[in-house]
Image (cartoon, rainbow over all chains, first blue to last red; front, top):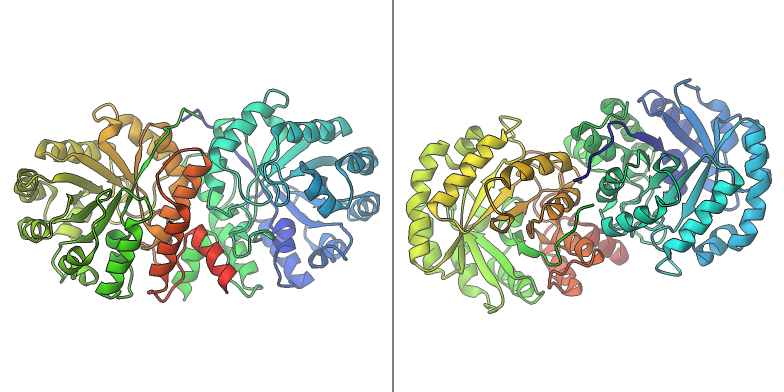
Length: 302
Length: 302
């Protein structure tokens, strides 16, 4: 095994990527209470919602109220997704610390998700990134379908690189490489990062895995071996995958923290508080959350 | 990532280690039908039962009938556990290809599990291994609690090595290193294998992981990097962990095969047949099996 980093930054995306893929509607005051709990776990970053049009993601239509309602912890960076100019205006009003733009590495998924070609998407994002930066925000870029597309199948690394470089040209500060449908395997992550590191520094990159096939932690391990130190995760594995019904959702923050701490890699997260935050949001859903930590807690309670 | 092997041997332990940890009683004819299905998947090895006293593991009291009832596929090695002389006699009657002896790396677990000290256990196993070899059988040794003990906590690598070497001195052909309670993490697997490889060849070793904390595939990955090419697994993740209620069981054969094939590592296993075998045994239990492959199948059927 290669030498591993000593510290990892976990970006909690449950309130956005988790809830966006849950059927249950969670009340705004519960989201606020949940994010406030997450803010006290030691997590350095929470993506609280998405300023997309409510028509597309009704679960997150209360982004503004959530942003207004939460208690801001000065040690936490609060972020949200913005798809376009209109979303940016709402997000700037909500006064978040970081804003995230997103697009896909595959043409078909980009069209389906954003209703534009990849080329057209750059034109939409350019002023968004510029104005966010002008307003003093840091900007994160998400690339979806990096390891496979539900419509196109394999996605060439060349395409991932092209989109990644164009996003940095637009001015983003960090790029999150997304395994949107949870198909990435460790060999593929190894090959992809080997190629990407020829052009981008690991400090500019975050990895965003889904656990559809149970390989998320293995993919984290390979990424750590490559020197990646930032990972997106969702407490309890909240989320699911719209393309594989019944599949596990996002990489679970609680399982990730458990593995990293076991390997003497610091995260700053207090596991007991994180577990409480997971059990809290689980109590607002009509399902058990899939993380191993939640499974063990649930069985002890049954 | 280090270079990986091109082929992996999977030893299916579901009929023994899986069923042994399930509360449900599966009828003998269903076990036979299940093992016959497993025999047609391309799996090279099936551990069909255990010849321990029925008082200790009532779920496996029909070991003899199972051995008699199954159709032997000449491409499959059939194996069973034998704890002592009495078990050996029964196992030899059942005419299996390989017999397995077992003990723990930690004194407390060995006492609890075998009711003998580690030192006393060697005396019990010595004639068992000798007579099995004399009868033309290969013999496998299992060491439990390699990565942690439910009673003692950490288990020094020195102890693992001592037990391992003594078992090879007795004449075993292969050693399976067991993470009995699913606590192993990739760093620990890396450190343990680094140490063990100073004394034993990777060709003599198999790894036996449980997925209690979701780290089984990550631990496989590190083992592959160390050149290990034999892994124990249980279809569907059948099993559970007696020390962590509600926890996932054995590393799931179906998820393991999925990952290995995705990484272009051959196993000889046909995934569709393996899935069928998993769904078959699931239909005989009153629970969903925890593997990701089974989860996806179940959701599609609900």
